[in-house]
Length: 253
Image (cartoon, rainbow, N blue to C red):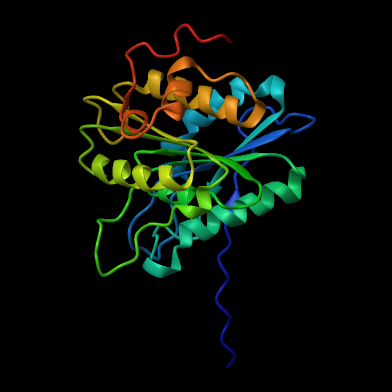
């Protein structure tokens, strides 16, 4: 008796968040968190919870610019060592954005393990910017190669991390940013003092910062002064930029 072949898992893009523009001129791909090792399928509900609020804000901000915003649904929950499944799915999603929308700039915006996937896949030719929020990064190990950074050359990169994060070590993202800054001057990192992994305590400021960065990177809007200063400042100043309380309240809409 013949055995049925196992179905091949594929990544997919969720529906565009908000009304999909008639003419798309930029794309944000939202990369949810994940696990270090897991062969299980991700929960769509968890993906929505972790990134959908940010996606709604970006979709509203970019409506008039022709922004399409999609959540990436992974094949597996886990990064899974050298398989790097989440990074592979992020690269696939960038390919899919090009297939759907043509030659438009793409921003990879990831949270937790999705932040690592965004940074890994930032070298895709369609990607012009990377946003990594509380990115999960591995402990440094002299026996293992460090996280790659050269793929980020030519991209704008923003890392945001809470100083009280108990799940992903903010010091590891700082060290990563130090190395990335040597390969690419357009790297900055903001610290959200007293906030934890989910960045909920200062969510309004964090989302305003994300909006400022994404709209500036994809559509050429002027960055706010703090983002300009962070990108221009030498290490460590531009990599330990404090996110001010109330950030975004005075930004132009």
